[in-house]
Image 1 (cartoon, protein in one colour):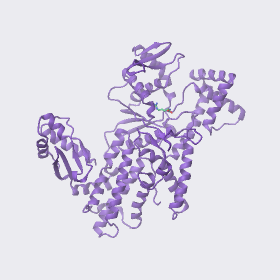
Image 2: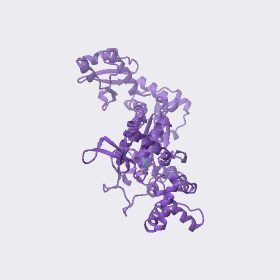
Image 3: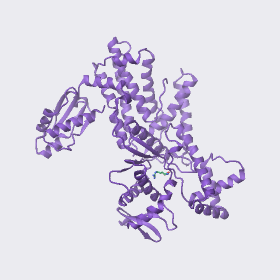
Image 4: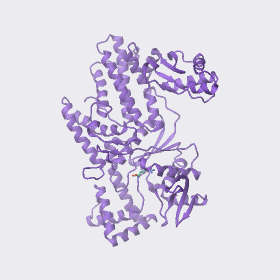
Length: 576
Ligand code: ARG
């Protein structure tokens, strides 16, 4: 049930019947204050102005036409011409009741789209770092929300698995294998990369071999490809451990690395040249874009092929956009990466569009995000100034959660404790990121994220266990609960039912805008509304009918909270 959509449609129809044009925007929003109703229509004034009518008179005409009998209790014209909408209690109760027993909490899926989600995207023979963390968890939450709303999500882990550095990496892997005889394990990727680089810089024979391997690899040499594949597999099997720990849905099947596009690049560059988009400039091929200016105010040049014949990150992203439309038949492609890559993405996509590779209707969206900062406001680093490895960060989260839970949850068995620690540790790190508007930088602060107060994972997880505990104290079966009548006599009951029915609106926003923080904010509010309901409305000691009705509300709150946290990839536990 999407109340906002329902009200929008009905008010729009009434506005049209009252003389407004077909695509008039009723601008129905949730109200900020209860005295303004549950929802408000803010589009009346604008539409009246277009028609040359007095807004309040036009509002009255809309009310004369609108068909919302049974849905609303009353509609009021307010101020210069707002319409305040007060929903009918009975209607709320019936819909909340239905949501409890319906599949997917009664949420109707949208017209299914195919959506490519390019997220996580670490680099081969490099450790995943905190920058990849943001991409991984935000991207995964949006993916889950899309699937929940009935869309087809194609996970595309755009791994950096191609480039000239592979000559050096292959040469070094070969050296390691020769020296150690056995299959080597790439347990410290960062050290491996550094050592390879050190050899490359200091050992001329090694460097020459490395350069030879680049050429061979690009020419499809079997030995080099096998070595390359080993590097990719070793890196990805380690990254997979991070994904598993993070409760992220990516698997090895989702790897669609840069190498996938490599064979397409010569054709694309030739085509850009034939179309007159790419021009030769000092041996390189460059696309000049009027839409972007360089520091002299001239059109900015984007290199698509280097003088030495090599292709670039941009060339690959042009090919990826084309492939996602043409071959994967996607309606949308979302890339989750750092804001610092925004200009790069926009340029690649502008070239893609200019070349006519994708139609206007195909949506290319950079779901950009800001930086993770330390408490000092500077980019998040270790004490020694190194970038923080994801695996180390998660270890620390577990350590801190262990201490926290040791103090708090003394009544739990060891097994229960372990589950709580895991859920809280990983949940805190993820939730801290997901709950912030992704476009702004955010401060990574252990104490905040592990707090049981405020919009945090432990608070949300605890709120869930509180609802669960109600059901551990009473034996009602779900059938009896489903059959019982829901009645909303108390304001707190009504507020809870309304909030519960707004779940879909929050999920839809996440799907549309790639903003999991909207769902976090919704769940946090829901937990608050539940809390005040629980304080004011006794459940277990109430009369039988009232008790069942309140249990129904509590059950729907439990399911909604769990489903919402699940869409965010946050685990819940039964007891804390
Ligand atoms: N591998 C890149 C990095 O580590 C991120 C890739 C983002 N996706 C893309 N299609 N460019 O920064």
